[in-house]
Amino acid sequence: MKENKHVVVIGGGAAGLSAALFAARAGAAVTMIDKNEKFGKKLYITGKGRCNLCNACDTEEFLRNVPRNPRFLYSALRFLSPDDLQRLMNELGCATKVERGNRVFPVSDHASDVSRAFLNALRGQALKLQVEALGLVIEEGRVTGVRVCDAQGERVIPCDCAVLATGGVSYPVTGSTGDGLRFAQEAGHTIVPLRPSLVPLEVREPWVKQLQGLSLKNICLSAAVHGKIKYCEMGEMLFTHFGVSGPLVLTLSSVLATADWPQVQVTLNLKPALTPEQLDARLLREFAAAPRKQLQNILPALLPARLAEVFPALCGVSAIKQPAQITAAERAQIVSALQSLPLTVTGTRGMDEAIVTCGGVSVREIVPATMMSKKVNGLFFAGEMMDVDAFTGGFNLQIAFSTGALAGHSAAVYERE
Image 1 (cartoon, rainbow, N blue to C red):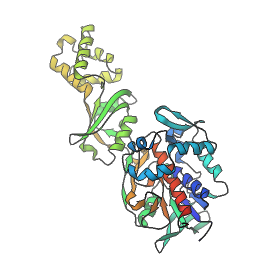
Image 2: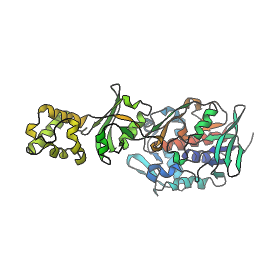
Image 3: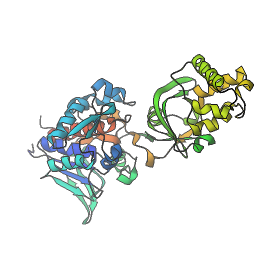
Image 4: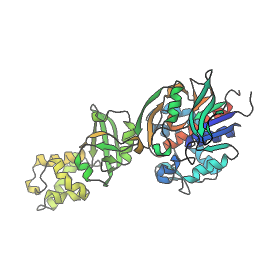
């Protein structure tokens, strides 16, 4: 048996960097290739350039933030937990800090420090940029090499094991163009259909577009499919020129990433802290305090000015009516619109605006304890290219680092036992 197993890691993002480091630490000779001009390109734009590394929570809380195939991640999270990752980063010279929502960032607030820490730890290994992987060499059911193309032309890099860590298809400008998914499919793997996740939503209502740039806080967004509530959360939302975005919307897009959006009923509650009766009483107090004002001039006491301006049309009550002219039925219409304002979602924005990819290599065809393919010996998977994704807050990067670490280590020790 070879003592210095050669592991080729395809992709130099979070998953690839982690795979390369843990393969090297387990004694393998590592070659990491990436077609970009620098490693960790997608890391540079995560967390608005600050790199939200992970979330400082326990395993059960973590898995509650993974809407698809969470149980597949148990072994990876045991191998490299959020606490382990923080210790690792500090060991590599990149100190971390915990902020609101248990989000973990480098103390420097520079994403570049994260990739630099990994690369410094990988000195002595073969780290090759602007090398494009063309495919896998598979002989008798086992990976024996990786076909590549670089400035010298096409060639094969022989290997004992290969780790595919090429990402999904979100943010394709970072190099995530689905190459690894094609390699996996050519190797016989099933690719679960790809959809954008953690992505803004497009809506039909023209009034939404009129409010471009307006952010709402402490509101409730809910979604139902065929009358059954699938999502209901409080938080922040943003109106855009095409529809809606913001934390609530991104999470909703993840929960229902595989939904047929025209079948989803999305509702906005602008006053979730009040019951309908309490809200009606609040309206009556506002009316009593300004009996001669028109409705359009009373609503800013309840809503942001720009939203108050369009709101009378949304609830079907004349904007110029004074309180004495507003009937009980019309008041009920106002209350109803404040607490159940419908939004007609026509679909999501494209993959180029999605934070992560929903879908990918079926986890049923991957051994969760090692991240190795069930179809090809010596082939391992890591990160976003697998059919597992999570909400915002550092969960997706943790998945990349954890699955990468387990895949790299497993590749290095494969068959040594």
